[in-house]
Image (cartoon, rainbow, N blue to C red; front, side):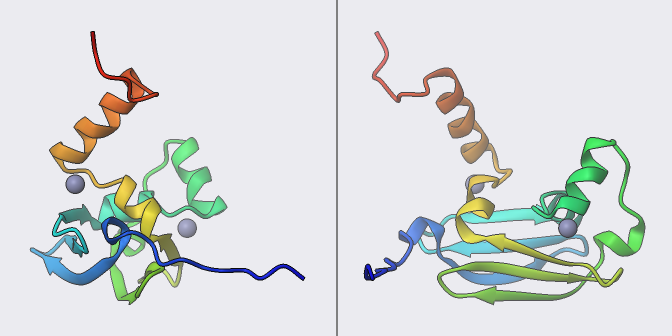
Length: 123
Ligand SMILES: [Zn+2]
Ligand SMILES: [Zn+2]
């Protein structure tokens, strides 16, 4: 049997602290001192499960209880879980969540990657 060595995620993908931002958003502080803010609406729509994916694909909106978290839990080195008022539970891998950070800096980086997928220097 092969030994399965699990390395810790880089600091960039370590959620260190979760906080509520205003009434409708979750703040995440990452190991590299980056701060992300996900509105609950966005957070629910990022749920990677099949059911939520279907809602997105059909362009339906989530009912109010579906965007009202009742419990948010951080799993060090792994990710974040959210229990919603409609009894749904979402699990977000840390890497997945960080890559979807909606802040200007991160979305610019994503766009740059799309335009220049191999990351080659310009010119
Ligand atoms: Zn879901
Ligand atoms: Zn960001």
